[in-house]
Image 1: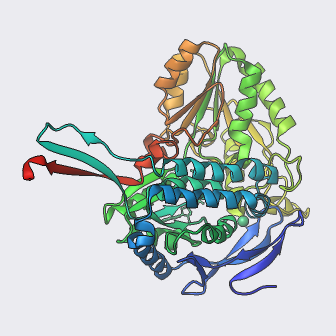
Image 2: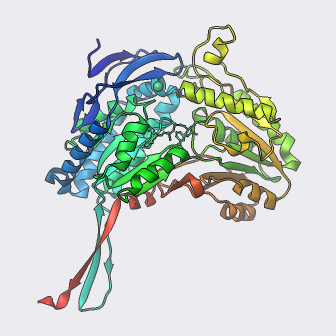
Image 3: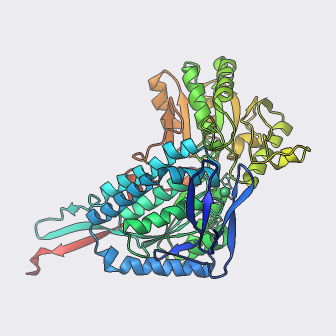
Length: 508
Ligand code: NAI
Ligand code: MG
């Protein structure tokens, strides 16, 4: 059954559902004004899943107007934080009740393993919403002592209409990170999904309506970045823009937002280092180094994609790391429970990763493992028929800091391993980048661990782990990895203004 607004889909695991295809504005699914659609591709098979309406500039304006109206409407504006929290908990419950379906959609549209989507991404959505629901009636201002004849206090007020632009690597998580604090503080939202992976959040839109949010509070649109994303970032009636994606696009978003001096939060790219000192637990370091680069098909902004190893343990670490990659990184069908790594999200990302691998070879790094497509167009071109954007987990050793694979964000299962001699040199190498998102370090010397953690220019440091993120802990970068923080209590600061109220007590 196919209609304009929804389609019946069945996944390889037998799950069947009705997929909404419209723009979710004012709690209704609607067509785009131009009728333009974007086709979602299954990256495992390269087959079309369905086509979803793409918002035009005019549709963005319609969504912003809906959000503005909702922001001023007593049904949202007069709601207490306690009552907003009830709706947020209800949404978290509904997402939990649909966990298997949402994980299925994610595996189909994004290519990530179903088991990961089910055990990590769906719970993350719930956890983040519940965490911020808890803050919704506990996020108040201060009373400030200005002497006995006066009184001053502050109230935290929502910013207004928040434009939120998310990427394709974690469609559910990224939506929750942005919706949670925005709703907690009483804002309204226009959320633009990544055009490569719109399906899971369009299904969540149905649940948003069911959870009881008034029309216009949460609007969810699919659309091209250059059109819908840009229209949102520059819209004069949008108060805030929160963006996650590449540094290049983040820079564009910042320029567009400058026109009306919008509040901005940017989470952008990274080339995060992982340091292995000579006194490290090498087994532990190898295990986490594998997680740090190979999880989510290597498509993680905080992935520790540069591994810096002390010369005394270099060979042994590389041996253990390669063993970890070989034994854990099972590449295959996202619906196979044994799969650790699915396909890259799109043909563009697949080709981009293969191009970087080519450049690593040309620049003279040693290809210690992988380096080849496992399926897809590149293999098919060799005469075999093979589908899907799969890339073998790839390890380059003997990398030099001038090489592209060491300097640029690859965003795939490809890592560069380099050698260092001293702690000082390791820190200098770690900081020799325009990025500053995460960093991991392995040592048994806790004095050194905390010393190096402070020396490294990054928003987050993991001591004896990597990419061990937690919704209760602030997340974000320094340098060109972003502006502001999401998650934790710090994430709230991005979604409210502080109003100061001065009271002259002598007025009576
Ligand atoms: P992108 O940064 O262009 O896309 C992210 C989001 O921004 C999408 O929703 C997109 O539609 C939107 N967008 C694109 N152009 C825009 C514009 N001019 N104005 C407003 N919004 C716009 O990333 P893309 O092209 O999908 O991936 C390219 C590279 O970006 C990746 O290889 C990776 O290196 C990096 N990336 C980083 C992510 C992260 O989590 N930090 C996530 C996704 C990509
Ligand atoms: Mg897709």
